[in-house]
Length: 347
Image 1 (spheres, one colour):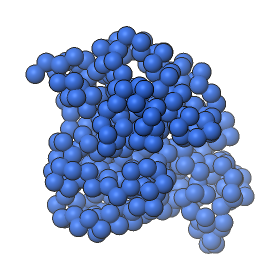
Image 2 (image 1 turned 45 degrees about the vertical axis):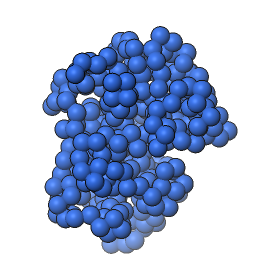
Image 3 (image 1 turned 120 degrees about the vertical axis):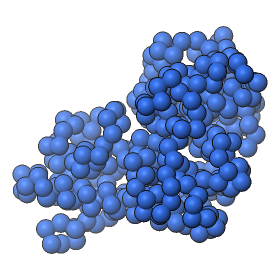
Image 4 (image 1 turned 90 degrees about the vertical axis):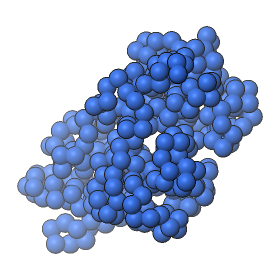
């Protein structure tokens, strides 16, 4: 079936993600651009222009967001309203459809009225695509900042929480990611030189430094400046990590910092695995139900699936793509999903 091309937009607080689907439903292009939205709307206006130049025009646009929560806005309702207004300015020629979770797609005016449904609903767009293509699954989307965990049962989303507050309580939103998470949020203390050492309550280093030191940071994943604005090298990451425990990097050989980074990485993985175990036991998922991995940190999801004894399935396999070997589809799952859903709504 031939349909009209669609562009999907995921307006995040730290990144803009976008995906273009052609008339056959295949992903033509996916991109992610850094966007420090908390510093002002001009940052989003700039990257929207860059994305528009790269993706071209389309008669239909699907939009989801999490950027409404940044402290640029006084509350989520204001954030949704201003992001809706900005998208109307940027896409005056195309039909704009805003994803409102359980309400499906709504127009711009209704999106403002339904702000609580539109706010941070991007996880549900990804889960809805998984539910449409798979019977049972555990979707594990590990991004730069957060991890979204969603159970799919018999082609339906089996989520207990639908907004951020409820999802945090339900264990379906775990605020940890592989790039931007401050290290003291992963572990309050770490083993080092034979002692348990408290980490300083300062954002001297982030998880990007951990995965850079152990050689697992995906290429292109770390798009914002380092915590100290310094070099994004092994040496720079070691310097930042050392500061977390009151040291200079020169006080120990580089291998000591690699070992510490590896321990912190394992601690983060354990936290995500514990949350998955909670959902698996709560929902009674059979042992052969696969883990569907998405996000720039999905390498952790693949390892987690192996640890749980479950098959692993890449999110990108759910949709056809012009470049099936590229990782962009899985990196930007909500943008791809909202485009896929918007295209089918129009069919």
